[in-house]
Image (cartoon, rainbow, N blue to C red):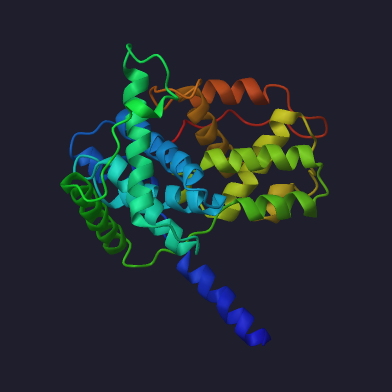
Length: 302
């Protein structure tokens, strides 16, 4: 039995190998098609927002939304935003994530949820709309209409492209379970665990999931939570070294998460990129007691 457990563990580790280097992130297919870095950053974040809202409306587990976000980021390291619309990719990844997490939803429900969200966004942008909660004026998608059939077939087509892009290897690990384990191992308070969990949620809107392993991202989330809460962490030896993560890598990942807050301070649109440095400096200017001051933050990742 122990041999079987070890074999499954080795299989999980072997499958979790979809990572790209910085050069690949700077030269994505979208960049080759003329999509700027800022636009790609904003479009990926928008796709993740659609995924999260859809998973809530579909009443799925949190793991479905997390898995779909990772699949979306992975897909756009292989394919271009100029070729594949971010909304269609979000629909396909949610539908696929429901299957992967054994939380199945009908494709009809996925299509209807995304159609409803699109209608509400249009109404919100319409200055003449007075009541966003009035469902009577929403344009419902008829199940037997040609429009519904076209959307359904398009989602199926994109799902096949997603599977082919990954070589049908779609194992996904999330940092959340590592966050809980690390915090408990170091006997940290629940406040730090909750803050680190929130950072783990937000990290999925960045490209960290295709640059670092989930256990390393979890270390960065705990690192950032401790700094923002002003809580001291073990120094001898440095606690992050125990989990095979250097201080430099933890700072790079923290800057990437903070860049998201600067780009979208109120949940709206904005440019991605260089705001992470200012936020990082503000949050870690006064290090927690018992810890050494951090070095200057690295340039924010693309």
